[in-house]
Amino acid sequence: MTITELKKMPFTDLTRKVNGFLDSIKRTDPSTGRIANARTYNRKRNTLSSFFAYLERVHDHVKNPLVLFPMVKLTKKSTTASMTENEVKRFLDHMKSKTAETKTGHRDYLILVCLSLLALRRQEAASLRWDGINWQTHSITVIQKGGTEKRLPLPHDLLKLLKAQYQRHTGTYLFQSTRRSKIKHDRPISTSSIYRLIRDTGEELFPGRGITPHSLRKSFIERALDQKIDLVSIMNATGHKSLEMIQYYDTRDVLSRNAVHGMARLLK
Image (tube, rainbow, N blue to C red; front, side, top):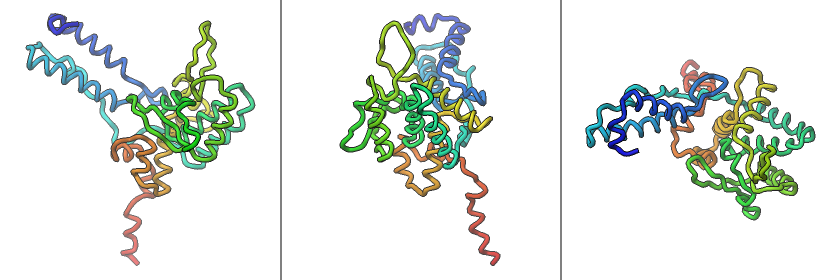
């Protein structure tokens, strides 16, 4: 569509198209109904608004349709459910106990291990490839959000699990799709399958908590902070570029972690 055609489009039609685009990038948390990618939504909404502001200024466009679509209000802290270290261990033990029950048992357990130990997003886990593992340096290449790469170390116990899985692998990806198709495809497990795996198992173990794959990433950050691991090391693991995002995911108890406790010595 050219700028001339855009200028001639009725404002109601333009508004409808903008609304459709914004709806297409919106991701809703099924457990809470909230927009799960509010920051991404706001960023793309603002980029589009800037484009129409440019058209208003340079090409005498009538009106910016984004004025009808306000930004999503951001919470100061993540609302994603998280787990304690003991709860994560319980989750891992539960999945490990079921590895022999299904053909995908080992795969599903390894997905949970990677999400828990490597702080991966589900898309990052789904796209892991066998040729991304360097068996000599004990590391793996991860394709992050946005297509950039990062390398993560593989702890000894995880490396052993990967080597065992490698002996039975049949494709390119660590976590292959098992869906049948008339045309054979070497494809990874879908992100929706990973979501259902963690959500359903989480509901079985922790009813009503709303555990999701992102809960494991958030729990990783909080456990690392509990262990006094430095912030740079945490950001190297998660791929976050700012301290603000680490603080956003840190929702540990603000009552027990409070400087007020240290002031009690004044009364002694």
